[in-house]
Image (cartoon, rainbow, N blue to C red; front, side, top):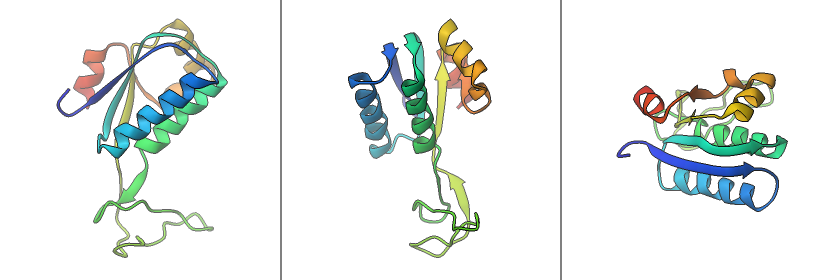
Length: 134
């Protein structure tokens, strides 16, 4: 899509080579400046705990908090407060991007519900619905 990068996943998302490919794909999308990413899960048959962890990492990578003024990555200090931006000293923050999931199968839906991660991810039943939500 013009403004949304759609990543079609297939098969099992489990420990091993598939996770390395998934991780690199997300990093490549972010490095290329794609800040609206939709993960299409329609052909995913199984996700294990490693795969779930990688989905959470992808969420954090895309939805990271950045400086609203210059876009630099910002961090909280030891007290849990935001430090000023290391580049421009601004204290204004925003979310860099948005990651959404579409077409989860039964196993993926049950896993997200069981782990209560359905509230963390923006999950849609169809790709069209997900694209419209951006």
